[in-house]
Length: 89
Image 1 (cartoon, rainbow, N blue to C red):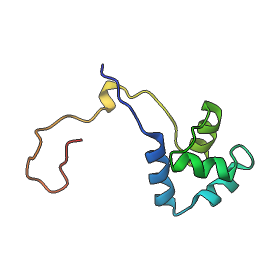
Image 2 (cartoon, rainbow, N blue to C red):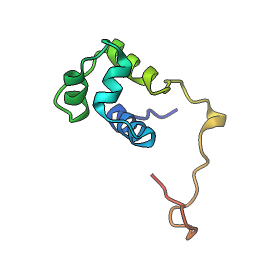
Image 3 (cartoon, rainbow, N blue to C red):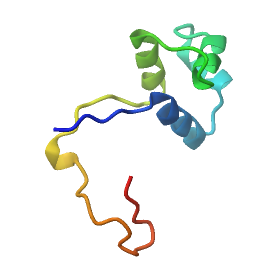
């Protein structure tokens, strides 16, 4: 089984954009778990989050970390099949 590296910063930013919230609003939801300044600096790449703080941020955005089962993995298709929306990452 291959290892996949996930950039949580991008996942968090995408979820914030989807929910139409900014760092200030997310920090308020975290109710003291992560300061607004720390969260802002993390999102711009200037600081890191501890495991506990990252877990709090993910929970506030209703995101969970789970190991993917082989049945849950997408089937790889040939790149450039010509269908709209088909992209190989």
